[in-house]
Amino acid sequence: NAGVTQTPKFQVLKTGQSMTLQCAQDMNHNSMYWYRQDPGMGLRLIYYSASEGTTDKGEVPNGYNVSRLNKREFSLRLESAAPSQTSVYFCASRVRGVYGYTFGSGTRLTVV
Amino acid sequence: RKEVEQDPGPFNVPEGATVAFNCTYSNSASQSFFWYRQDCRKEPKLLMSVYSSGNEDGRFTAQLNRASQYISLLIRDSKLSDSATYLCVVNPDGIQGGSEKLVFGKGTKLTVNP
Image (cartoon, rainbow over all chains, first blue to last red):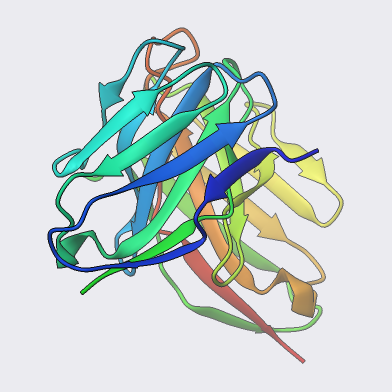
């Protein structure tokens, strides 16, 4: 009954370092998403994957890359972290149709 | 006009009060609508979907007005546990759209006071 699992929950990076945020869902959902949430900005879509093998840019893709490894897993990579990428990152998944998203518990990332 | 707009609040109400949130959306072709709840430092969670005919779940009632392009959430008999940020969410591409991206409002913060 895990739903959407994100790792890590917290991370501090130095400017220029790289890291990958992991996300996995066990609900057999087709679509997966990465959002970032900043104070006063709401949730903004970074990248999404409508199905296994496809990925598309969202509203704020610069500085990020993604991989849809299989139907369960969708990872987000920061190649060269910048302080502007300090944020809370949420992964979500969804079944096509009228149902809403299921979110992971988030990754709090600080870039110093 | 932004895709989804909400009054940011904050709304401060006493226990037992009735409170209503409104949200407007810009794309008249939007097909799916939701209200999410987000507690402080937690992930958003689906509160309820919003159907054309309106729908109710206990103390919560959601309404959709397609002509005016807004949705509403009414909370009756507010509880302390209702304190949270409420997010209005719209799918602007429609159910048949290939992308199925949901667009989130920035949220309305509600505090219910004893």
